Image (cartoon, rainbow, N blue to C red; front, top):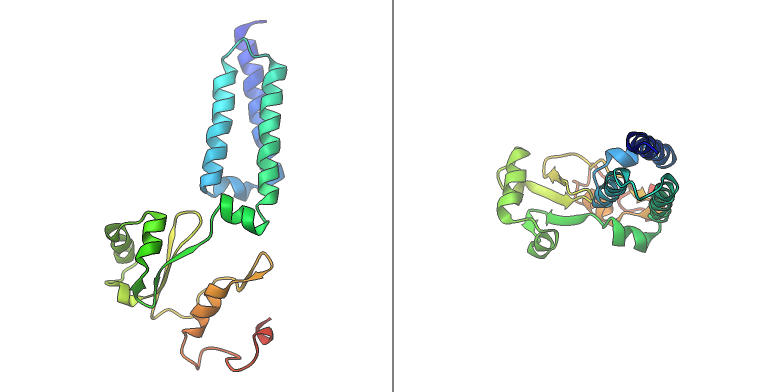
Length: 190
């Protein structure tokens, strides 16, 4: 079989499988830059790039490789909604600054130095950590900063069927006139 024809067929099959993954998992999955998505893309690129030019690997073998990898990715994405698997694979948001106080242990845990933290704070237009109500390292590596002057944070109270207690704490930090149902039970919020 002509080498160019073989490479062309493998390339077309690789693109079709990627399109299939996009349709199964959704376009948003491929636009989000999480460590899991980066690993998935590296491996997929390695499979397609490494196998496509190797003439000793048949089209059927290539198709089996890429289908097995796609199945693994789809299973992991479906299992990601299970709590302990999500925290293992994707991680959880981590609070770095709360009420102006820096949690040094959490900063070390996520690998952010004092200089990096202050640079991000300055780019948000703030001068000091004392101006911050909360700074949260998100699972995608971005730092979300809520300053002391901001109104109620725009985060979901319930995520994947579980109450987000960190958000409830942020709401409790608002002045009493802005919080609703402060003295009523928690169930009134829902």
